[in-house]
Length: 168
Image (cartoon, rainbow, N blue to C red; front, side, top):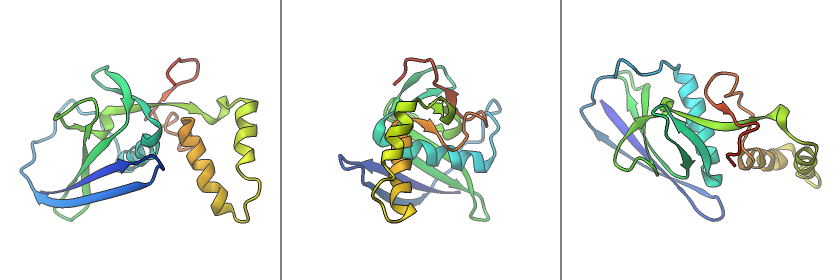
């Protein structure tokens, strides 16, 4: 089985650098208590969490541990037909112990919980741009920074609702 290791490094200007390497490993069989999640859900959760790393995203592990995630090293395991089978992660709070991406649930705010002040702040991002692409990047960054769930993770059961919790 082939594993791809991807290290995500974040710097002050929030530029993302991806370092990738390939190697072969013998992989341990799945734990029967693993939570079942579709491959597209795993990909969505991974992309969402990674986009929030520069801002420190509060996550809860299935063990009950809750902390702020700042870095994540991801190993992609592949099936024989070269499709991704699973994602194994190393984080800033588990050290040398790997765990699966589906063992994490971020704490996010539903878009509907946005205050009038936050809506005004977000709308200011669209002023002065000539193309929707210019401001859509800034809006996504603002939503990530403020931990709003624009991917419907809460609805899908992939994230916790952070409304009325003093997490951020």
